[in-house]
Length: 119
Length: 112
Image (cartoon, rainbow over all chains, first blue to last red; front, side, top):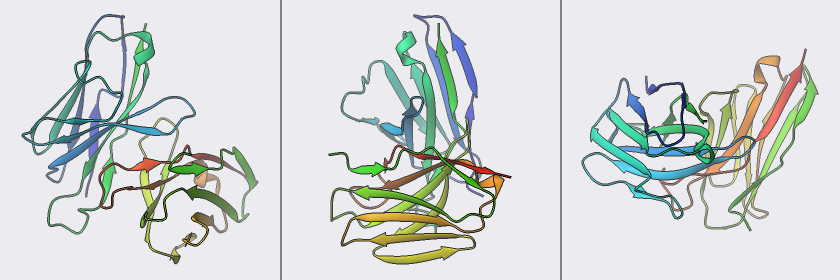
């Protein structure tokens, strides 16, 4: 149980284009999902917290107009990198908080990540 | 000072060795600590979850928290090549599972 998937696993795009990354909780409902970014040899940095049906909460320094987050259902959150540039190239990882009221509510389950390369 | 600091490694050990991975944290109010394992090009997976001081054991893995020195450790006994991965310590600064703060990670290689 508690499987989180991401799609695509890898994407290469041209500078100036937009890229959408999907994060799905496959066997549980996740009211809260998180989006992280990880640069090579660096740790995971939280970008934003996404709650189903409400606006995402962005961390300081993360441009909300550039990184659009939508959490329209209890099993799906999307991150859209708008007008991507080479410096946005990174490993994007989502996580989902365990189902409310369940034994794993205080645990985050991570997706496999999406490697974005902007040319 | 960063909230969580972690020995950068990399660490290379022979198969069967005991591995010690360590982190320090800055705020004595932190209560929950996690260790995640991340294989190359994959998302992290939770290994151990501890609360407060003391030891917690799960198979070959032991997590230790020393609140007096704000030091957390993960020990791996009888290390295997399959343990080769990056290990990250993490804590939720505000309690619960919101806003996990991660250490940089220590890359471990276990040589057969």
